[in-house]
Image (cartoon, helix red, strand yellow):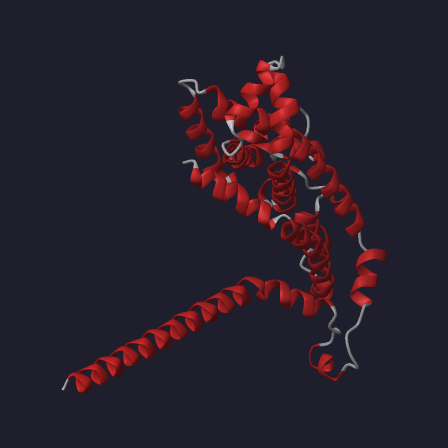
Length: 293
């Protein structure tokens, strides 16, 4: 009798293990399927642009074309101001990165280290400013740009883009600074450094990975911003890529549609590579920030 009960219990345990293993397989397959579907949805516009960039023009005749063509690449670099748009974007993005780091790094340090009564309200105010849509801020910013005589100039973008990049950079850098032990900084001050000296020579080198992540994020935000670029710069020779491609190059001409797609691909690839190189830094900054909230 005892032997029959033991065999029954063993069969039941085996059945439960098989059911648990089957459930794990179903959950794993479901998660992978959702992840693949999400990746395809996110990558679909880029993949479509990549295919279009090397397709032949001509609608139905494209189906009988011998293969991919580089005609749109040649047209993009030799017959359009695409390189001018790229240079403008590099200049604006580089200057915005410098301004953003000069403002965001000290601000993040003050919020995380000084522990003053105004720290929390100031941090909340910075976050709220970041949440305001650019379509609402450009009205007041346009008055500032016009007053300073910067309309239709790349300098107007250098002036207004930090209103977008500084808030998010402050929060990212604050998350990374919280991961640096205060003891290291205090020991540096005991050894004779001032607070500024400890910040520059001890703290800043420790947060360089976070600084690198902020540089990439800031440049990406500046290169992809559209509302301010369309509002404050309207001359083709001064446009960045974000408005130069759709407004200054395409201009609604269907004949240049595939050339515009080619330009979008050439802009997206280096940005995607840079973000991929620093993806682990972004994750580290976010995780460190959440651990200390």
